[in-house]
Length: 202
Image (cartoon, rainbow, N blue to C red; front, side):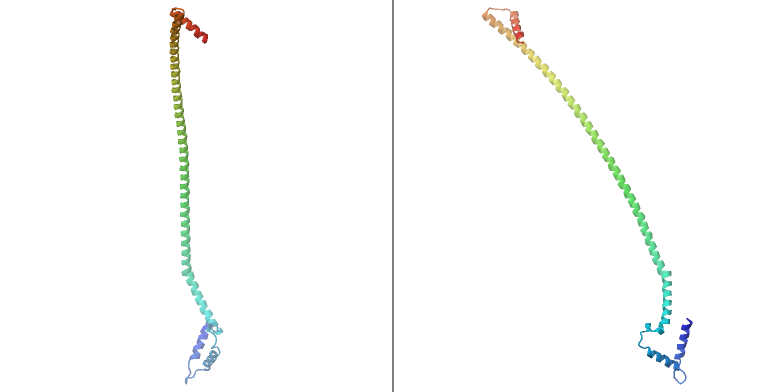
């Protein structure tokens, strides 16, 4: 830095005019050097490298201080806020997932219970209907058996009555035939004759 100050003083002394309105030989020297280097792009001029490095260091330090004191903390705050938000969202997502899993498990349990209850009701209904059908079938069979018994009894009664009528008719016919052929016979004799004929057939 002392070197830069010395160079600046030297340039100021070189630009001060002397008495008589003539510049010193240093001005002529500087002008001569400037004329020699007039075609070089200033940033590429080796004589300006020290000042360029000086200002580059100042700008770099200023940018570093600005970044470290203001920009980087703001970016870090944004990143921390975003990380906290992501963590909160993950916690909410895990909570929602747990609630969803619990709801699904509850639904499946309720569905299984409903299926079991429906199966139990269906089994009970089938059993009750089967018992009712069996009871009605037994009642119908009993009623049919009673009717068959009554019918058989009625048939037996009709048969017995018919046989009685047949015996009477046969007796009367026998009496008439015997009376026409041989003369009158008693009812007892006619019944005995018919009974003997019937017994012989059986």
